[in-house]
View 1 (cartoon, rainbow, N blue to C red):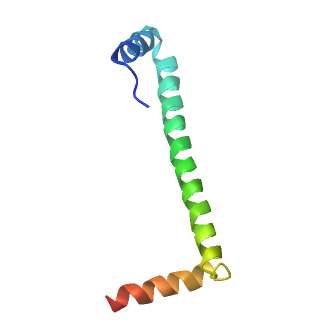
View 2: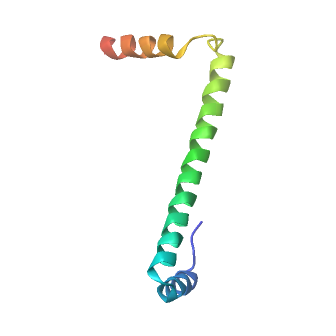
Length: 77
């Protein structure tokens, strides 16, 4: 989602008015929002991977077994 230049300018001016410790809180909140979005992406990926495993009938494999399969595949290349 793109923010209009006008809004970015307004946000910057408002942050500039804050004392340094509150400006840091704003930065911390921005980092929180970015991390939250990354987590959402990983959750969506995990759901996709689980559904694929069920669909292909290999959802019963352990993580170690999957790692061994991947390692064997990589060695064969």
